[in-house]
Length: 398
Image (tube, rainbow, N blue to C red; front, side, top):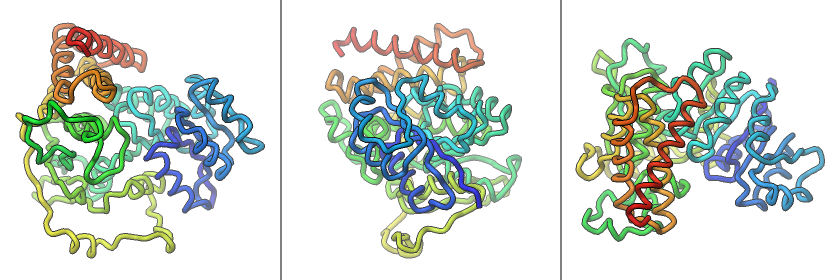
C-alpha cells in the first residue's frame, strides 16, 4: 500500500493538530510532506517538524523563519511568504492538501492545490464561500476532489452516499447555537471576547468561535454547502442542535432522511476526508466512543428552529447566495473585519452582524451581477468588502 503525500496548512491550529493526530495514527497510509503555519507558535511547529520530518516547512515571515532555522531536522527545507506556500502545495508531488488556514487567506493555496491536481481536504469554509464555483471548475479540470472537513459538510458528504443527487429533497445543517444561545439578548452589548470564544461543544479558534456565537458560521456553511453539493440555497435548512451529535441530515424525495452521528471530535470528519473513499479503523489504543453509550449518556437530542430576530446572519447569507455577483465573498470579508474589531476590543459584539448587513447593502447597490470568474475577481470583491467594513467601523469609532 503506497502512502499519500500530505500538506497540512495551518498545522499548529486546532484542525491542523487534529489532522496530524490522524496522520500519527496511520503512518502506513499518510506521509506529512509539508507543514505550513502562520508562525505564532514557532516552538510547536519545530516540535512537529522534528516528529514528522517533512520535506518542507513554510511560515509567513522572515522573523519566524530565522527563529526556526536551527530547530528543524536535517533534510527539511524552510521557506517563507505567500508565494512559498503556493509553491509548497503546487509542486505536483503532493497528493492531498489539508487547508485549515482561517479566512480568505486560504483561497489562493486551495486554488493552487487543485490546479496541481492535489485533492483538497477543506476546513477553510471561507475559500469555498468566496469562490466556490471557481474552485469547482479547477477541480473538474485537474481531476482533483474537494473533500469537506467541516463536521456538517462531512456529514452531508457521507449521507449523500445513501442516494443519488436527483433524489435529494433538502439538506439540513445543524448548529450548536454557540455560547449565547440561552443568554438574554439585552446583555450581549457587554459580551466579551472571552465569553464569545467559550464554545460549549467544540474546541475551535477565536474567529470561528465568534462566528458560532453570531451564527454567521452557519450562514457561511449554507453557502459552502450549496457550492459543494450543487444544491440551491432554498433547499438547505438550519436547525439548532445544542448537543452537537447529529451533524447534518439529508432528506430524500421519498421522505426518508439520513443523519450522521458521531462524537464532537474533529478527528472523525478529518479521518473521513483523509481516508475517502475507504473507512479506516480507529487505532485500538485510541479511545473510541461507542455510539450506543454516547446516545445513552445524552438525556435528549434537542432541535429548534433558528429565530431570525435573534440570529439574522443565516438570512443574510441566504440572500447573499441568491443575489450572487460576489456577495458571498463580500459577506465573508466584512465579517472577518468586524470579528477582528470585536476581538481587538474596538467594537461591541452586537455590532458584528449589523456591519456585515450594511456592507451587503452597499454591495447590492454596487454590483451589476455575475459570479466571479477567477480567483483574482473573487479576491477583488474580498478586498472591496474589507474596505467597506473598515470604513463603517471607523465612522462608528471602531
